[in-house]
Image (cartoon, rainbow, N blue to C red; front, side, top):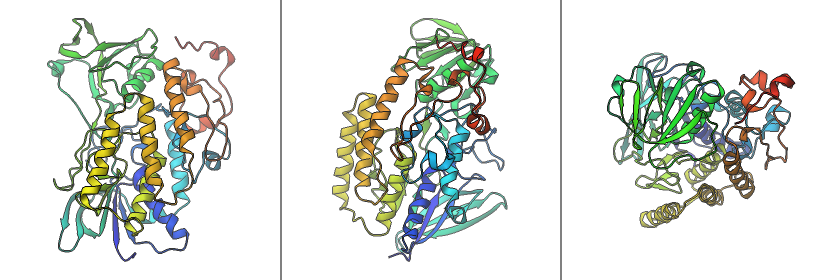
Length: 461
């Protein structure tokens, strides 16, 4: 049955994966349902659609993206490669394993530009509210056309939520922070390290964003960086300019007080305290409520909302895998909507969710987490015809990456890996990452290294 209508909210990597899954079906000569996708930004790419703006966008909407200048992949590109579109196919050459933001965005666009996906997307359009009409078994969605300042509604038989969950900052309060005289921001509003040259920076939180912003600020010339952790330190081999301290208790002007009784003065504070799953357009009975974890409650196979089988969520997990996991979820969702996957009854679905949650609870190390998410993707791929991806080898790369960072947080991006998609070994980038200050696509693909004298000045510790 294909005489139904699918609505997709968001044209980031998850929403685009959903469009590609249906296009893959169409290329085989099979009919697909009517599809409409809505994106509140003016271009696709979601988080990878970089903007210099902070706070709100052009039309006054809360800003979606958290990307910043000089952001480079913090994991090997070989771990996120699409199984049906390799980096070598896109660039026509071997590139390094850790590309910058602009290069990854170019790759994402490369695959989707080969399709007619843009025909299905209405940009500058934000979802305001969703109702589920039980008598019609349809969703009524109210949208705002931001350009024309008009409100309209659409009806869908299935609704796919692909909005991501790294947009709404989690911002805790510390007594006295309102009187801090320097810059105070969340990682969501961080747009580059240039403003922190020769500054003493305090990062609150010990997430991947704290790790990366600390290294970026060090690379671009901050005087010192302190990472204040709540539970556990990142505990890696930092250069002397970066240190970790227990959680801040309060502030007095520009002085931070820590749980260990020490104090220190700072020029800026950056909250690296994570994000909320914020879905304000959904009513209580349809809204996913979860903290950032590898297997959110309420989602059967991490995709189908357990209390409404016609509501689908993509990319709501904490992530080691990214683009290819979104693909796997989209292919599973597609085959479910096309009637190829029969859902068990509610109790059995709940039992399956609880089983996965219990397995996640038993994980302890980063390698455990990699194995858990690898098993999850294998599970949902077993239901679909998604092109083969050697997940065991990808998992090995993730584990090697974890060790690379432990050995040297400053040069792990200089390591290279081999694609499991087409067997291409990555090239060593022409310039060591710590010395590469230009993250543009043109500079990245330029084969000219920096001066040898400059290379000799690279100091990792």
